[in-house]
Length: 124
Image 1 (cartoon, rainbow, N blue to C red):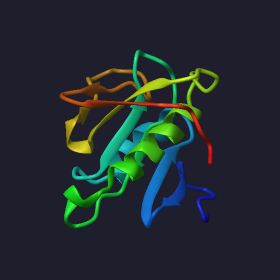
Image 2: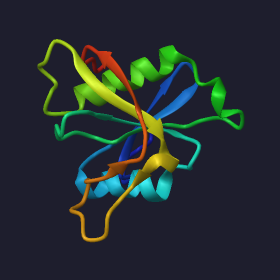
Image 3: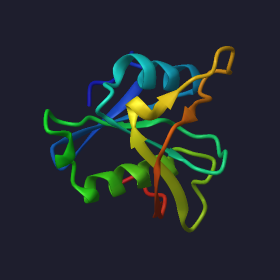
Protein backbone atom coordinates (compact mmCIF):
# COMPACT_ATOMS: atom_id res chain seq x y z
CA UNK A 1 0.00 0.00 0.00
CA UNK A 2 1.20 3.53 -0.67
CA UNK A 3 2.01 4.75 2.83
CA UNK A 4 5.60 5.87 2.18
CA UNK A 5 6.22 9.27 3.71
CA UNK A 6 3.03 9.05 5.77
CA UNK A 7 3.00 8.78 9.58
CA UNK A 8 1.18 5.46 9.31
CA UNK A 9 0.89 2.17 7.43
CA UNK A 10 -2.38 1.48 5.60
CA UNK A 11 -3.96 -1.97 5.39
CA UNK A 12 -7.38 -2.81 3.95
CA UNK A 13 -9.47 -5.28 5.96
CA UNK A 14 -12.74 -6.38 4.33
CA UNK A 15 -12.94 -3.05 2.49
CA UNK A 16 -12.16 -0.90 5.56
CA UNK A 17 -9.00 1.22 5.83
CA UNK A 18 -6.92 0.35 8.89
CA UNK A 19 -4.17 2.88 9.65
CA UNK A 20 -1.26 1.92 11.94
CA UNK A 21 0.98 4.58 13.52
CA UNK A 22 4.74 4.22 13.01
CA UNK A 23 6.01 5.82 16.27
CA UNK A 24 5.07 8.16 19.15
CA UNK A 25 5.00 11.43 17.19
CA UNK A 26 3.37 9.65 14.24
CA UNK A 27 0.73 8.18 16.59
CA UNK A 28 -0.20 11.73 17.65
CA UNK A 29 -0.46 12.87 14.03
CA UNK A 30 -2.59 9.86 13.11
CA UNK A 31 -4.94 10.21 16.09
CA UNK A 32 -5.35 13.97 16.22
CA UNK A 33 -4.87 15.14 12.62
CA UNK A 34 -5.62 12.26 10.23
CA UNK A 35 -8.44 10.42 12.04
CA UNK A 36 -12.03 11.66 12.09
CA UNK A 37 -14.05 11.78 15.36
CA UNK A 38 -16.35 8.92 14.20
CA UNK A 39 -13.43 6.60 13.33
CA UNK A 40 -12.50 3.77 15.69
CA UNK A 41 -9.26 4.01 17.68
CA UNK A 42 -7.42 0.96 19.09
CA UNK A 43 -4.39 0.49 21.35
CA UNK A 44 -3.07 -2.22 23.63
CA UNK A 45 -4.27 -1.72 27.21
CA UNK A 46 -2.34 -1.81 30.47
CA UNK A 47 0.11 0.97 29.64
CA UNK A 48 1.98 -1.19 27.10
CA UNK A 49 3.79 0.81 24.41
CA UNK A 50 2.48 0.33 20.89
CA UNK A 51 1.06 1.83 17.74
CA UNK A 52 -2.20 3.73 17.62
CA UNK A 53 -4.51 1.96 15.15
CA UNK A 54 -7.43 3.70 13.43
CA UNK A 55 -10.27 2.02 11.54
CA UNK A 56 -11.86 4.49 9.15
CA UNK A 57 -15.61 4.52 9.75
CA UNK A 58 -17.90 4.99 6.77
CA UNK A 59 -20.64 7.61 6.70
CA UNK A 60 -22.83 5.22 8.74
CA UNK A 61 -20.23 4.47 11.44
CA UNK A 62 -22.24 1.75 13.17
CA UNK A 63 -21.60 -0.46 10.15
CA UNK A 64 -18.02 -1.45 11.02
CA UNK A 65 -18.26 -5.23 11.54
CA UNK A 66 -16.93 -6.74 14.75
CA UNK A 67 -14.62 -8.97 12.66
CA UNK A 68 -12.91 -5.87 11.25
CA UNK A 69 -12.42 -4.43 14.75
CA UNK A 70 -11.05 -7.78 15.98
CA UNK A 71 -8.60 -7.88 13.06
CA UNK A 72 -7.52 -4.29 13.79
CA UNK A 73 -7.11 -5.21 17.48
CA UNK A 74 -4.85 -8.13 16.51
CA UNK A 75 -2.77 -5.68 14.44
CA UNK A 76 -2.60 -3.25 17.39
CA UNK A 77 -1.37 -6.09 19.59
CA UNK A 78 1.22 -7.13 16.99
CA UNK A 79 2.53 -3.56 16.67
CA UNK A 80 3.16 -3.30 20.43
CA UNK A 81 5.57 -4.47 23.11
CA UNK A 82 3.01 -7.25 23.84
CA UNK A 83 3.64 -8.87 20.44
CA UNK A 84 4.86 -12.13 22.01
CA UNK A 85 1.96 -12.48 24.47
CA UNK A 86 -0.59 -15.23 23.92
CA UNK A 87 -3.65 -12.96 24.34
CA UNK A 88 -3.75 -9.18 24.72
CA UNK A 89 -6.41 -6.73 25.88
CA UNK A 90 -6.88 -3.97 23.29
CA UNK A 91 -8.86 -0.82 24.05
CA UNK A 92 -11.38 0.23 21.38
CA UNK A 93 -13.19 3.56 21.29
CA UNK A 94 -14.19 6.37 18.97
CA UNK A 95 -11.48 8.90 18.12
CA UNK A 96 -13.82 11.48 19.70
CA UNK A 97 -13.18 9.77 23.06
CA UNK A 98 -9.38 10.15 22.80
CA UNK A 99 -7.71 13.28 24.21
CA UNK A 100 -4.27 14.50 25.15
CA UNK A 101 -3.42 16.45 28.29
CA UNK A 102 -1.31 19.57 27.86
CA UNK A 103 2.39 18.75 28.02
CA UNK A 104 1.91 14.97 27.71
CA UNK A 105 4.70 13.18 25.85
CA UNK A 106 4.16 12.16 22.23
CA UNK A 107 1.93 9.10 21.91
CA UNK A 108 0.41 9.41 25.39
CA UNK A 109 -3.37 9.86 25.43
CA UNK A 110 -6.37 9.76 27.76
CA UNK A 111 -9.54 7.79 26.96
CA UNK A 112 -12.94 8.99 28.12
CA UNK A 113 -14.61 5.59 27.57
CA UNK A 114 -13.67 2.38 25.81
CA UNK A 115 -14.46 -1.28 25.27
CA UNK A 116 -11.91 -4.07 25.43
CA UNK A 117 -11.26 -6.83 22.89
CA UNK A 118 -9.05 -9.75 23.94
CA UNK A 119 -7.09 -10.98 20.93
CA UNK A 120 -3.98 -12.89 19.89
CA UNK A 121 -1.33 -10.62 18.30
CA UNK A 122 -1.26 -11.19 14.54
CA UNK A 123 0.38 -9.31 11.66
CA UNK A 124 -1.62 -10.98 8.89
